[in-house]
Image 1 (cartoon, rainbow, N blue to C red):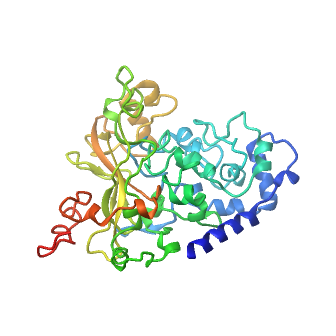
Image 2: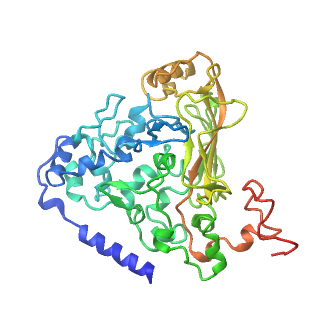
Image 3: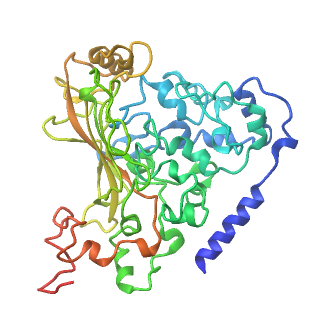
Length: 452
């Protein structure tokens, strides 16, 4: 009954916010900024709200970290093991920014006219940004048509950036890909079975969207949980309900990710620059690209399970590393003794990327644009230019180090009949959980000779 009430409320909310804007917007636009000016004539607080969000700043609000430092964390100042970092690569990375014209570090974050209303509210299905255009729309877009179509956000609005992060469908997250534009019920029970759109769960207040962004994970804020709708006592079995205290809902209800589209699991930058014949894997995905190096893809991936309390410590520019061990780009802080931690599923992205072999910290290379690595295949020049952008010394010596990054698995929820069974994790034939790594002496359900 509770789920039916929630669904009814969602339908009513969408109906209430449906509005034909064609009667208000009739004149052609010469620039996307003119569209924003028109939007702000009625929605006069919208731009100010956007400017206080992670989507605009690519940084979360200030918080005090474990070292008692007041910091901001987000896409602007973290390193990943895909295309590495935003600084010095702005026009390519910021093609997914919710704004116009973020070409370099001088971008004016206070200019309301550069807020892109259309990327989140286009309902025509025709709006798109130029892939290397610093957030500017494609020149062939009919801005009048798009502006007249605006309405509540759809999966298309969110997916155009989040489903294709990292340069293609499914590359980054593993639980977000183009199959979710119109998913089958077995792909995602909420979106495919019940017709949910992203904002039905990622609730929004004053344009601030709930969800586990990098900034949210760093600060341990802005989260939401399955139990917010379903409650903690959702199962008929009291034994299953007890699991909710220490096991995230996603652990049982997302048994595998990348079930339709393969996801990238390994990216080796050290092999970039070689002249090789193209090779595709069993999924039809390229395994080598001269610009980017060597890749490994996977489908139907069993997640990695970790204790997680909502927070992760992120590698920051200039942090010292030990090149003999994989560098943790975002280290989860939960553990078995933490009452706020639960066993949760993750995609662990692995790869090799460039670091300063004298200063022993990761390098932010300039990949895109004039004199970038993708033009010159010169790691020294790319490193010199990229590190100058973030105002860190480059010694002139580089190497490549293995890195790992944890990406939460929250989507592609299956129906209860396809969720994990007790024997998936417990019993002598179960190998899904590594109980010793999780901090247990062994399977916690097998005690004193009792067998499942």
